[in-house]
Length: 81
Image (cartoon, rainbow, N blue to C red; front, top):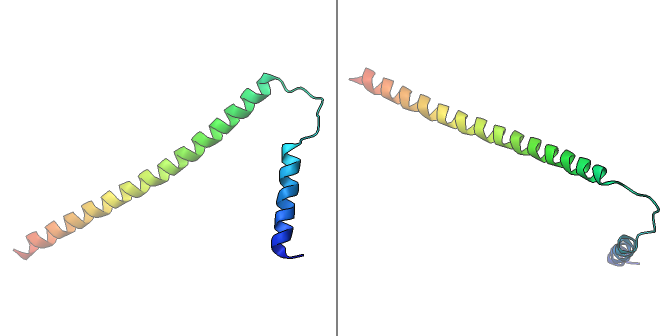
């Protein structure tokens, strides 16, 4: 069999298994769903906060470098005259 044929076969088996789950005789109360959603919300908020912190740090560093460049240019211009 070709590699493509094997990939198609495994995809078909995966789709068949995913669309026809076995019967499970268990009950998960609504509290478990709220707990899962709350945990996912906390992780998402932490990731967004971390990304925002890194971006803000980079922006502040860029402004600091620009300010220092302006100050050094002003100092060199005043020392030239």
